[in-house]
Structures are given as C-alpha cells and as structure tokens.
Length: 163
Image (tube, rainbow, N blue to C red; front, side):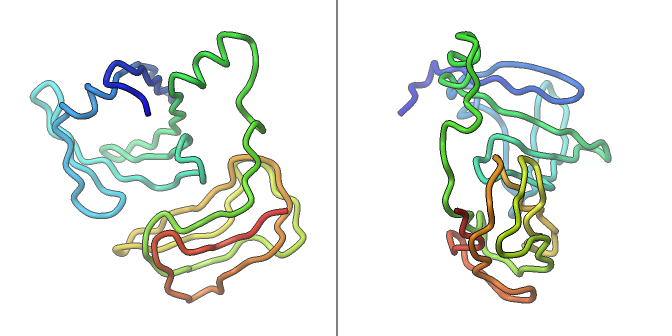
C-alpha cells in the first residue's frame, strides 16, 4: 500500500504534473454523482466529467468546462519502471473486464473471438444518464461477452471475458 508521500504523475494532451496521496486527501474534491466531480483549486471552482476509463483506471478521458483531456496516470512503480527504460504495458494479463459502476449496457462494440487493441472501446455503460466508454488497456482476444445491450449491471459484474 503506498504511503502519503507516494508520487503520482498525470500527463495529458495539454499538461503534466505530479502529486502525492497526501495531496489527494487534502484536495477539495466532491463526487457529485458517478463520473461527475466538483473541484476547488486556487479559489477556482470547476466541474469535471469522467467520459471514459480503461479497465486499469490509469487512462481516462475527462471533460472540464467543455474541453476534453486524455489523461494517463502513473504511480510510483510505473514511474520507476519507465525510468529504467522498460514499459509496464503488457506486464499484467487481464482476463476479465468488470463494471466499474452500476448502470445499463447501451452498446456493445465487440464480438466473441475478436482481437482488440489498447484503447479500443468495448462497450458503453450508462450510469446516472451519463454514457461511459469502457476501453481495453492492452491487446487481447474477446473470449465471451457476458452481457447484452439493454441489460442492467451491478458494480463489479463481469462484462467481458478475455483469452
């Protein structure tokens, strides 16, 4: 478990910064509803909407004041591995994609047996009237789609099984 001094690095198409677990705990951040947050930073109030996240939770797309940002979050291990000249991609073989929140499956974009690549959209899950794209974090083969379009799912429920 990381301590409060553990560093994280956030990189997007517009900015890059680092922070610690302590910074997160002291932030004035309020979860308004699933995927929607309110943040006060430097006496400035903003709402942020999470529009998609990969299964690792390390690659996100957020919308702030109408502007979209693709974000990659790296923890202390990711940073260390990168500094050593290696890549963490492919080091963890994911076998299942589970629902990050309760919702309704709106659209399924893959089929059994299909080869998918990092960043491909597997399905769209609606939660609190907001569409969330469920993306894959690595190259894989779809073994089985465990849900159907129009199906309600609970947090942690199996969505897609991978080979």
